[in-house]
Every structure is written in structure tokens, then in C-alpha cells.
Length: 357
Ligand SMILES: [Ca+2]
Ligand SMILES: [Ca+2]
Ligand SMILES: [Ca+2]
Ligand SMILES: [Ca+2]
Image 1: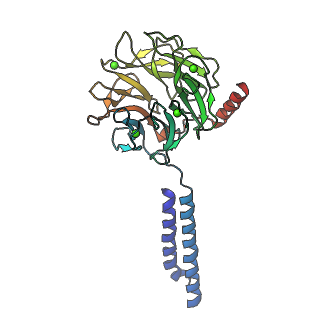
Image 2 (image 1 turned 135 degrees about the horizontal axis):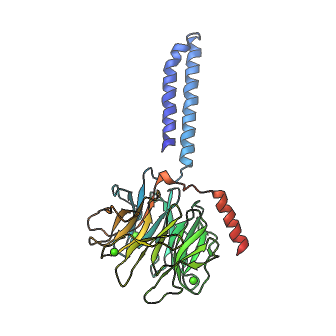
Image 3 (image 1 turned 60 degrees about the vertical axis):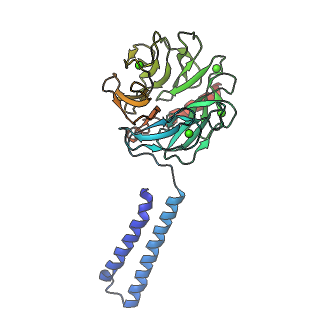
């Protein structure tokens, strides 16, 4: 937006220059003065036009100026992706169609949002990406099986997701334009829901390896190339989410048949703490980029809505929106973007993945 104003400012400057020229051109005759004035106006106008054209050609997706929460609004099968300011105001709809759109995930620079869309129905979910204002929605997966739960690498170059394209759930990595999909888990068990550590080195995810009726999903961690896969010493859980400082993982879980609550653990699975204590469901935790708060969804007041709390579970605030069903929060803050991450380090990691597997 700033660039478009530059051309106007140059036109205005040329107008001022034109008027001031009568003061400093007294030594020239009238004809010379007019030629010079016309030349100044011509060159300044040309420059303004050129800058205007360049700024129109170079239209990058904009990133928001304020902290934002992306989420879904609506009932199952026709949900839409929305964003709002992190205080719950200024809600804007980004998708508008009659299919289910869920799981929005901000790119690290806030210019894009990836999400899962059930565009062709029949549970054929696809990973889509769009500009942060909802424009340029692109299908990155384009196949007949489920692809869901997108999560960006910290440098914004890759997207992790889960897919059933190999017969059971696997964690995949692909380039942010959908090219070069690669299977990181390759297991007979069902893996899903990847969340990448902020240094881009590890992935926390769910697997039904070792699960039973009481503990349906287990929380696992692996290196970014799929090596060193191990289960965290946690009974079970859902929706793991790595903290911005890399030291903790939030997740939701049911214990002894209870409804879901939000928990946080050290990244090695020790020191588990329960953050919510409400008989209703509290789940899908999402960290604020400053690491000070956690957004989550809850039906404690009736319809599912988005809530925010401190990382110790205190000061719960409901981002109230009538009786709307709102879920799947994901937080972006321009003050913490990009997340202090070395692209060079990540590029070395990708080279290592290619050599290693
Ligand atoms: Ca929709
Ligand atoms: Ca698909
Ligand atoms: Ca698998
Ligand atoms: Ca609860």
C-alpha cells in the first residue's frame, strides 16, 4: 500500500517545484523558464507513473499489521476460514463456498494461510493455500485421498501435513507450492497432526502405535528427516503444538473418560501440567507467538468458541461471537515474525534429508 502513495507524493513534489521554479529561474528568459518548467513536470510525472506501474506489477500478499487469530466459523461441512484481531474484534471471512474449510495455519511471515478443504467431498481433503486476505486460493495436493492439518516450516519454504495417500496416515513434507511431497513416517500405523519445533529440527505428531481403547492417540516426536522417532512419556493426547521457545508442547487430552482439557508438558514429555478444569471440552491449543498465552476452543458456554488464557491456565478470556461455532485457532503476530530463525540452517537440513533418505 505504501508504494502506491509514492507516485502521488512525486506528482505533488513536482507541483511544488513548478511553483518554486519562478523564484530561482529569474536569471533565465521567459521562454527558457517555461521549457524548464515543462521538462520538470514531464520528468517527475514520468517517474511517478513508472513507480506506480512497478508497484502494481510487484503486488506481494500483505501481512497483517496487528496480531491476528485465524479460525473457522460455522457448522460442520460448510465451515469457512475467518481471521480476527487477537482481541476478538474485526472479524473477516476469507473463504466463501459450500464445502468444509478447516485448520488454518499462518505462514511465518503472515502473508499466506494454509488450510484443509473438503472441496470434492467424500473426505477427499486437500491442502489449500491463500493470501492472508483470502485471495489466490490454490489447491496444493489435488488427489483423491485425504490431505490435512498443514503446518509451515519456520522459514516458510515447506509445509508439513498428514495424508492417507499410502493407505494409512503418514506425515509428509512438501515445498510451499505443493511440489516434491515426501513421506517422513512410512509406517503401518496411522500418523497425523504434525507440529514443527521453532528451530525447524523436530516434529511432534500423533500416532496410533501403542494405542488401545483407553489411549487412542499417542504423542510422538521425530527428527525433521523422520529419524529418532520416539513416543513421549504421556498417557495419550491430541493436537500437540510446539511452544515458540521450543521448550514446551501443549496438547489436549481426556483422562478417565473426562471431556478434553488442555495440558502443557516440557518438550521431552516430562512435567505435565493440566491448564483447564472445566467439565466441557477444551482443546486445539495454539500458542501466541510471544509465548505468553494459549488460544484454544471450548464448548463450556454452549457453542464452540475461541478462548485465550495465560500459559499457566489463568485469566481465561472468551472471544465471544454470539452463538457462532468457532474452532481451530492459529495465532500470528507481526512483532514476532519471522521467528528468529536461520534460513541457512534450514537449507542445510533439507540437503541432509535428501542425502539421508
Ligand atoms: Ca467453506
Ligand atoms: Ca486430497
Ligand atoms: Ca503410517
Ligand atoms: Ca475440559
